[in-house]
Length: 163
Image (cartoon, rainbow, N blue to C red; front, side, top):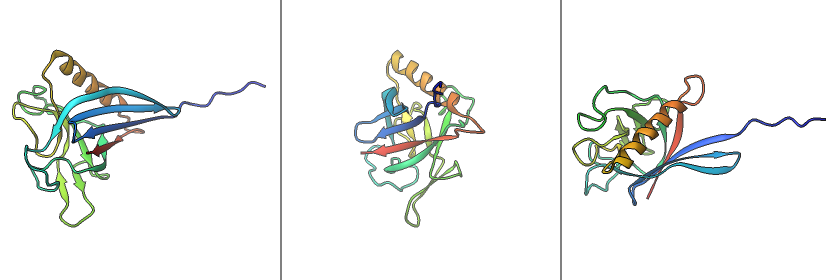
């Protein structure tokens, strides 16, 4: 009797550490961890605003959210003339809303994108580049996220926001 091989079980996840200011994309294949993009420089919110639910100022709240893979292409330069490509972050099926557990805890239009010429964000996770290697890594990350999107399958991956 021949043994049939089972299909690989592949699970993707993204991590953003507010404390260290890093973004990581990883996957597990049959239980084995593979880090695809490790500790890319990132930030969220405006400097000095630690409260999590102030629109246009606070960093993305702690928790596990959806990083939607169906990006919005702004059609602008990737980081100097606007935000460029935008991967929405949400708490549910509506890609434009991040809803917390208490009344009034709601944020709109939060996503992952390249940082533009103004440091910080309105709550988005922005990827920061200062070297040619970081620029190449961000481009490769966005390409990977676009390639993961399948309208009939994988539409989002978990984004874990930690301290």
